[in-house]
Amino acid sequence: MQSLHVVKIGGNIIDDPLKLYQFLEDFSALDGLKVLVHGGGKIASAIGQQLGIEPKMMNGRRITDEETLRIVTMVYGGLVNKNVVAQLQAFGCDSIGLTGADANIIQATKRPVGEINYGFAGDIKGPESINTAILTAFLQNSLTPVLAPLTHNGQGTMLNTNADTIASSIAVALAQNFDVHLMYCFEKKGVLRDVNDDASVISSVSKEEYAQLKEEGIIAAGMIPKLDNAMKAIQEGVQSVYICHADDVLEIVKHKAALGTKLYT
Ligand SMILES: Nc1ncnc2c1ncn2[C@@H]1O[C@H](COP(=O)(O)OP(=O)(O)O)[C@@H](O)[C@H]1O
Ligand SMILES: CC(=O)N[C@@H](CCC(=O)OP(=O)(O)O)C(=O)O
Image (tube, rainbow, N blue to C red; front, side, top):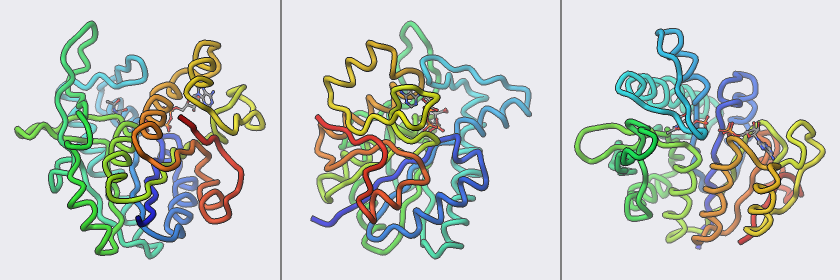
């Protein structure tokens, strides 16, 4: 099977124009088939605040009421997605910017109201909710899909879906057709033993080690949903999963550099 890289880029890089520029230059230089999934939570919060709407987060997830849904649709599907595509074009990477509604790429269901009402947050059922045929057709036509963290419910409503979940779901679905390598890129050197020390990278994490690190409180905050999604991918057919710094993606792929954190089942 052909190799495919699914790369997710997080909010702290997207929010920094220079870091984003450097990352997109490296991403463009990756050989072979690739998909980019972007977040943008920080920009959505900032623009919401400019419009007088305070962000509401619970367990690292955004509570998406009707007003917030309008903001995230504009910010993720418009501002962030189109600027990323324009910059990729400048680096010679022919890309197509999409939300989950475009070409019916990702259908989701509105999260049921439990103890917390997350509002218009979308949960992806499984690989059957991903239009792998159209994603494969884009890839075969030399286009790099750039996916915003938005899905739709098939009944006319957009839903907000965590970008780490989109990356994992896309990677698992495409693993039916490709040898998929999933990379979560962010502003730290990997999963760290001490979150303030970039020299404390844990080079590999198994399922058991993850449970232990979580219990000890070494893995916390946004790293928990990221690792839950990453672990799911490695258990469901993705060939390799890395969590690494946005600066290191090219080194890891091109030169097999021992950087970042590699996950094991
Ligand atoms: N053990 C850990 N190693 C690295 N980062 C950690 C760890 N525990 C918690 N974190 C926090 O998780 C954050 C990453 O989660 P998040 O902000 O959701 O990522 P992203 O920007 O990719 O969406 C890091 O910025 C860091 O503050
Ligand atoms: C439901 C939900 O929480 N959606 C996320 C989508 C953006 C995202 O995941 O952005 P980062 O990768 O930059 O964190 C949010 O609105 O914050």
